[in-house]
Image 1 (cartoon, rainbow, N blue to C red):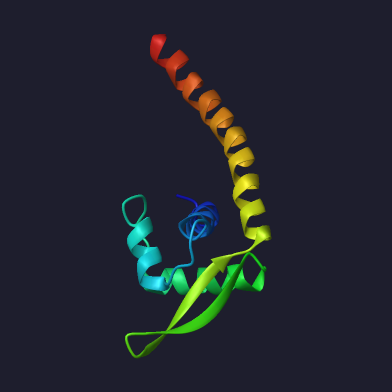
Image 2 (cartoon, helix red, strand yellow; image 1 turned 30 degrees about the vertical axis):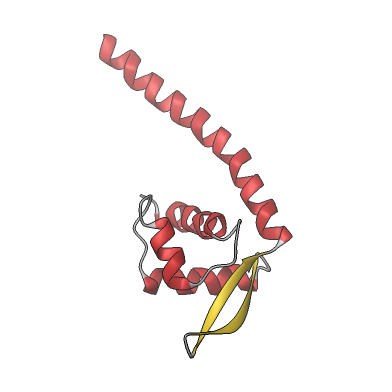
Length: 108
């Protein structure tokens, strides 16, 4: 898969993972894992990019005697998810065109 496309998809996955409640790194990975593989070394740069773009915020809170970073989606982050849904309609249309071509070739 194209690295830029995958990067964009992973960013939206991270936003979707925190859209209903604040979350932290390990839980985000755990929530996304059934759908796509993501490692800590991939997640944390994504979180930094999303924070720099004001799509999420970060806060630190104590949990079991340790400090843990929690991430919250912003209104801009929610808007990005909605934009992705609209973009995905176009991607699916393109996919339909590409696979239609293959179906036509198979019938010849």
